[in-house]
Image (cartoon, rainbow, N blue to C red; front, side, top):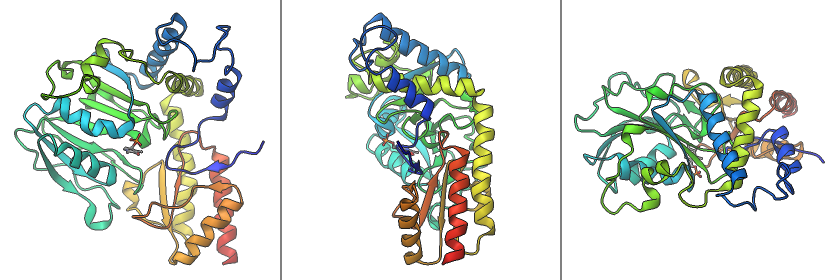
Length: 359
Ligand SMILES: *Cc1c(COP(=O)(O)O)cnc(C)c1O
């Protein structure tokens, strides 16, 4: 068996230890005689799996008692509609557009009400985060929406916006569980799990209880109403049982490592190896304004498309896969999520040095 270093922006790598545990339990989960894939979601054994996953998540993130944790389906993108359907009471929300995902959320919300773009960094290909300290927040806005780590562009907020008392809603998909987060700063914070946490399809929503309404916008489907899932502890219908189980294994892995402060340190170390190299290389350059650099997604370029293509091809042949950048930025992007070992980043940098000296 030979595993590659996978720098994909998503789905990303999972910890090898987690994959081995899942493999070991594949045919017989803890003496139940069944795979988790086969069990009834109403069984006692599955109830233990989902309840433990939620409890471990709460412990990791330090989720206050007045917030619900929901395991939902449809990935992060379904939240682009579900959030306005449930939170847009006045049918007004303010959006800070810092990349494609924020833009998609803004466009989707505009189907349900007035979605104001109050700031954007599109003028410079989303290579920075705008000043968010004193924005023209709308008086009647139901919430202010951000995408906190911009997967495609490799930027991250250094500070949360001053929402002037309005609720903050944040998409943290590509930085989920990569560092501590203060849930009390948000009305709702959510992430698709396939970047840092587990198999694609699941989205974890952390929502303040008083925002869970039984009167979402007229026409909102039952399945897209937070209250449906909150009242049923994420078991209203058949949840993505296996994916939630793998998320649970990842929570245990993080707890065993020492929690989110520890993983943050590890992520900072990994990112520093790559950014330090980029800052000193004559051939490779980071594309983001340094103070807004992401710890998770690191886009970089050379000054020629041919050289970029050659690099990506040779990297792949050497076991560094999925380094091609998003088409809107070009060049390369190394996503170095929680499960990417430090060794993967060190070896990538060694390979980049060698490539630079040969070309
Ligand atoms: C990947 C990603 C999404 C989309 O996730 P899906 O689960 O594919 O819908 C949304 N927001 C951010 C920040 C992402 O990185």
